[in-house]
Length: 360
Ligand SMILES: Cc1cc2nc3c(=O)[nH]c(=O)nc-3n(C[C@H](O)[C@H](O)[C@H](O)COP(=O)(O)O)c2cc1C
Image (tube, rainbow, N blue to C red):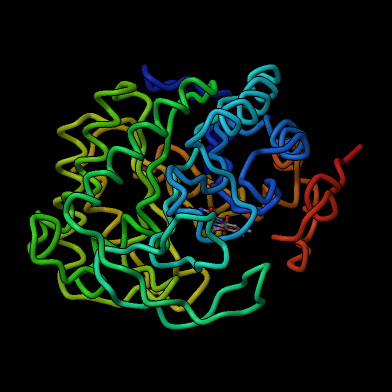
């Protein structure tokens, strides 16, 4: 087995100190008006030995703040908060992208700021419930379907957020097209039954993402744009559909034409009731020439073996980075990893956030 994971990586457009990526993880420590706080600076600084950090899902729009205490990047105060974080990570020699996550129908009026609305491609509620600070557990609401004009406004919100990200010092943005949030709600024909140019055929359902990617690329540069997908993932009530493979073939081809920096594929098969997706990963690799990141259930050994296959270029770790600020050092010497405290994943304060121990 090779020993690539901890060696530097340089693709020409991305220069990293190793091939590990800290996966995006919502931690709900921002203020109630969605501004990053100093505690978050400390959390990301602690993990700056990752080759690349991708931040927690961060909303480009007031309408995309479906969970309480997640950060946004659509106003100046948020930009100022993020600046401290990007500075800290850069100071440690790390790189950091912000994940732009619009929650779409996975939201609740009780979590949203005044004037914001739970929007989705179509008025189809997700099954299940979500937590709200103001009212405890609540059923997912029926979202209001965007008008065509509102779709275009939302695309512009992503583009403005990407510009803000550059102003805040981020090295790039990841468009969250995974896990059943807004972009995937457009891609999936069971959550998108629109009859305008954003619904129907594969081309139309892909249009929302591809217009965002194209315009963001135009605004901040092709080497600063990545996209995350979770094909066949069932998380957040994403129904299965027939033409999944054709859809991701088309998306990978179009994103390849745009020469964006990376596609990040999350394989849910190690976790929640989703099928194995080796074949889709192969399809994406065969269509997309730039960087591929894989995520989902990796440890050092599995990561090395995956890198050996030559399909993925980088490997992202979620929970292992959450619980081990010094994951790189631990993997280097084969030390044991801290175990997760699931009860503090989304709770306020430093407990289970910045207090996971370092080796020494
Ligand atoms: C606490 C927590 C929050 C997460 N939040 C996000 C998120 O904001 N955006 C996202 O794309 N994935 C999110 N994920 C998924 C992770 O990025 C990752 O794909 C998942 O944990 C599987 O990787 P792992 O097996 O290495 O943990 C989250 C995962 C966890 C554990």
